[in-house]
Image (cartoon, rainbow, N blue to C red; front, side):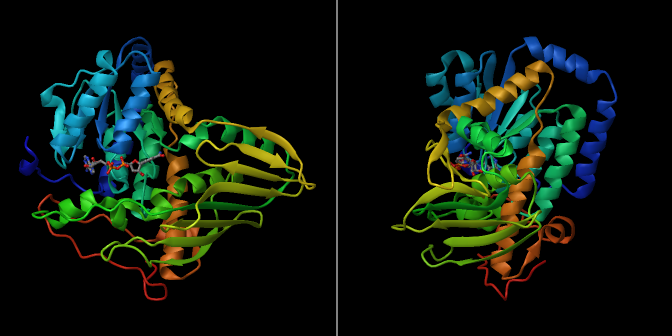
Amino acid sequence: MSENQLPTAWSPRPRRRDVLAAGAAASLAAGSMVHTSRAAAEESRELRLGVVGCGGRGTGAINDSLTINSGVKLVAVADLYESKCAGLVKAMSKAHPDKVAVEESAMHAGLDGVKRVLDDPRVDVVLLTTSPGFRPSTINAAVAAGKHVFAEKPVCVDPAGYRTCIAAHDAAVANQTAIVTGTQYRRQVNYRGAIEQIRAGAIGDIVSVTTRYCSGGIWYRPRKEGMSDAEYQLNNWMHFIWLSGDQITEQAVHNIDTVNWIMGANPTSAYGSGGRFTRPSDSEMWDSVSVDYEYPGNRLVSFMCRQIPGSAGENSTTVYGTKGICHIGAMSSGSRIVNPTGVTTWEMAGSIADAYKQEHKDLIDSIRKGQPIVELKQTADSSMVAVLGRVAAYTGQRVSWDFLTRDSKLDLFPRDLSWTGTLPPPQFAIPGKTKLV
Ligand SMILES: NC(=O)c1ccc[n+]([C@@H]2O[C@H](COP(=O)([O-])OP(=O)(O)OC[C@H]3O[C@@H](n4cnc5c(N)ncnc54)[C@H](O)[C@@H]3O)[C@@H](O)[C@H]2O)c1
């Protein structure tokens, strides 16, 4: 299929009845012996992989999986663009010649490519690495199709997507479909070590946490001549909130996920602020967002994210306890604990590159053992905590977790999305004017 013959539409977010139907089908299957035999069969045979979203992370994720796992093969790919499909297959064929067997008929370009990967009976595991806006519907469709899933973070950008993920999580547990997510720090040794120390009481009781994801600018992909609204926004996805969720969701979800892990809970409410000063004129993204999250037990989390060129970068999480402070540096910068007199009492190094691979090893191992990991709810919660902070900052209101997860009607995905279609112009949040819905 050529790039200008692109698509038929991918149906947007599944309606509630489709989600429930997937869950019901999964529950029925859960009551049968199907799972035992599925697990036994998967223990010994080759597992075949498909990738949906052949950009930077799709290429990185499949490379990690093919590098760390034996007995796996890439057999199908999908992307909006044929050239992206071909580019990923070419790169992986060179890097892992024995682990790639993608025929031309298994390279699917267009918005409905995901459906064709999920319909392919050879595919056992699908890596979902498109822009975030598609994640809830594609995870849900993958679970309904009985495919094991690797889903990049964030897994949702609004409350409607969150609810889809929660239903898909339950369906996956019922039909023993593995879902591992791209929150790689959960598998990074110095993060795990720090949290073990905190759990063991090394810093006493947690009083508060400060977490910051502050960096320079981020990419912007200008509109090319002939692009429809849809193609432009899908390509320049970072700058449209229905696709990225803004930087707090797209990028800083890593820090929020770490905080949720430390706290062992979701926050009860958020109050935030921020704004946009340096973004291109049609970018909906804010340059910075600061949020105070209240967690159960009167514990406060001070969160900040910023993407402003020339500003000082910082990416770390600091946990203040009654007996010391634990500092967890992002990427590969290690963790350490300092006592009240300033002496380092514990430290540990860790590699993010190892963590990126470990998530794919854990996924494949769990399928082979017949004990599939299903961690979607955990990452849906973290993604939703990011959404909570964004909504609090955009509206200028204090927003509760219960309101946003249970009552909010916010659903950003366009009702009718087609490759050549028009989309509403960019919307710019203004605190005090942007409504809490
Ligand atoms: N875990 C991490 O540290 C990490 C790092 C980078 C990116 N990510 C995440 O990975 C995801 C992808 O980011 P990226 O940097 O690879 O972006 P990218 O723009 O490089 O790649 C996204 C690809 O998906 C394709 N695509 C978009 N919508 C599609 C659809 N409906 N069907 C099929 N293909 C579609 C695009 O054409 C593009 O090639 C994002 O969710 C991002 O947050 C995670």
